[in-house]
Image (cartoon, rainbow, N blue to C red):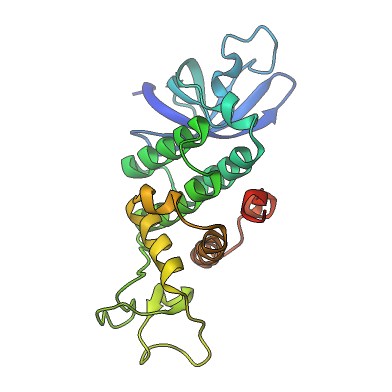
Length: 245
């Protein structure tokens, strides 16, 4: 069908000509879509802020040869305004949408879509520390993509844990027999926080001390960039000053 409708998160926008934008969307039913929003940069545009990054919208699109055309957009989740006014949330959101763009394609990926919407909603409402939301999103998104880390049993031979050698290249923690020479060990508190972020135990995560959060974030960033094969540009701009006070 040339005309279709879907729910979508705005991942990225790029200027096109004098008044248009190319909008990259992660949709609920059609996977990742690149579409043109005509006239959206004009002050009188009917789309206005509905197609800004981090927004969730009900969009109607017309199928094109290379890029689809957005013909309608109605706001479902106005998260962008709240996110951009808080710098830690803004930097975390940029890393989140960059990861979503890297992990998804044109195939329907409902769980990735729902995870992305949930993370942006949490940042907008400031339900949890922005860095924790980001790390939880990264671990869960990678798990949905087929790279679920193990922070208890050995990720190589599945020997029951707990184990403390951390080797991101092998998928998490490994036992003494599988651990390469010189591999670092993680303390119990950091492993506990990583597991909590992966499973959604926010009571434990919210109560974790700053030094444990820093170590968990380091492991999460290393694990993410290993599996994505090249670095996330947004991670370099993260504001983690709340973890250094």
